[in-house]
Image 1: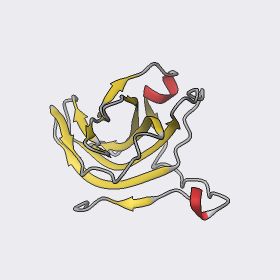
Image 2: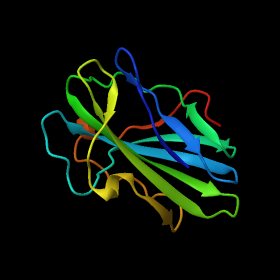
Image 3: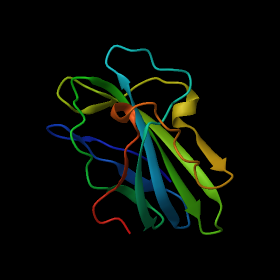
Amino acid sequence: MSGGGPSAPPTKFLFQINNFGKTPGELFWIRYGFVPLGAETPAVPVYTRELYWHDWYKPQTQSKDIPPLGDLEFGTKGRIFGRYYYRDIFKKWHSAGFILGFDARGGTESVDAPDAYTDERDEKGPPPPLPPKPDAESAPEAEAAPGSA
């Protein structure tokens, strides 16, 4: 499975899921974060937010939408990156990442980044909890999207 997504103008980001495999995949979490406008992309992504979204995706699913995130303030966010955590039918955990830049119109575009942002990998289990933040303003947002199982 893989994913990314376009913007959903004027200021929302729409996660999309793909399953180009031969068996169904069971999605659980999307972890994501941002690289500020004008900042250099770090060598390793640091996910600061997560979205719990439990659903099954049949083989050959392309660009299936998850309800859009709220206001992402495109003017202050240079890039969005994320990682989808899912299980296969054999109950083995995997993840796939993405990174996209926001263009001046609020759309998304491909950007160069280290492999740590876009690789697909086997995981030992579900993702560990996000680390706590020192203050409430920068605390990770754990949210369940409307309609998630």
